[in-house]
View 1 (cartoon, rainbow over the protein chains, first blue to last red):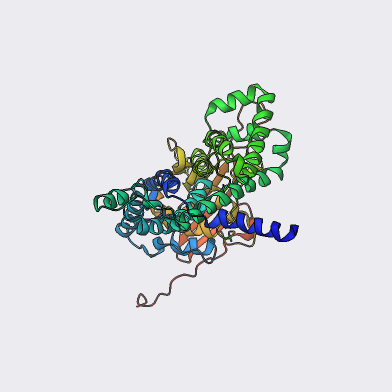
View 2 (cartoon, rainbow over the protein chains, first blue to last red; view 1 turned 30 degrees about the vertical axis):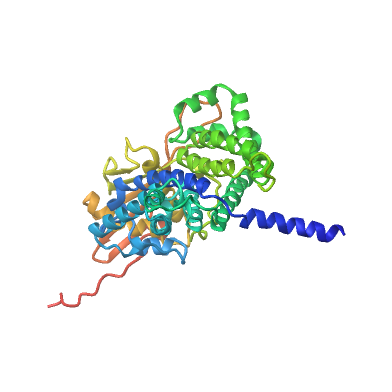
Length: 299
Length: 151
């Protein structure tokens, strides 16, 4: 009967997608890249840390609590002195370093994710799209065993005579979560653009180039040519549509991954959010690394 | 006052092409002063650091634009601004760079989006939205009790 076979095919695909054991290597690469991006973003808070969060800072906890969502919590809410603010900030940085190099990863991953989220919740009005995407990357890494490869943990295990890293279901779940978020984020950006006239009319790239964070060369180029502005505007929306759809088709993931690795940093530069482009490129790396190899139909 | 976590969306800057999406700047000066004492982002600030200050300025403007709100951010920042500027009567201005016409090289002068006056006195902290003169001087915090100081 067609119905039971279709049902079992869907069940098998679901099983492969979420529960087929996966080697830790792809997740380890994502861990190193995501940790590096997170460290760069963490560092960007350092210069103004006390101006914002210090005892006589511009963003006292009470005011931020009124402003942010009621379930937002942050360990930095407890800091009432400059020393404690600085100490907690350094502890978050230490957790991110441990995650990046893969030292005590099972502990470092949740601490790094919680610490990074804490930083964002302490002052959500300062957080941008790069922060949001990086937080998603870090939480997905908590699920898998990313420290089982390319890590200090792995070197220590080898020194103790441990065998090669084993595939695990948790790794597959983490990778699939990353893929789902990659598609959703690209799709959400696309939908937001389709609601705006400037993206239909082609002038969005011109408006984007006015942003102070965008290299002035873009403004010059877009100012000279309407055709270029139109092409870049529609190219960005097309790229996002291709990426969001390509992630969902295992056979297209290799191509989609390469397109994303090149495309997201470029889009990030054009929209004045280079670190957002870098975070999205990490998602694209995940897409590339989860592409089925020749002869593998599982995806 | 903000959407829940992960409902923030990924409609990154300028996806809507609205004036609100333009670069914002926070200017703080003593009342009557000719030039701002503080400017955020300060000249020379770049990258994520400057972007965070621009986001803060935009958030203050959106907060101040809410007629039913109490400008939580501006009042929250008051004590820190008083000590940094060294005055008890401040003007906090949020300005933004308007979008030029397509293909036009000339940039218009920044436009004021929000202006509030923060004053600290015997009556406590006052916030005055200078764009709404009919709402002058709502008392946000009552004066502290004089317990122990009355002889």
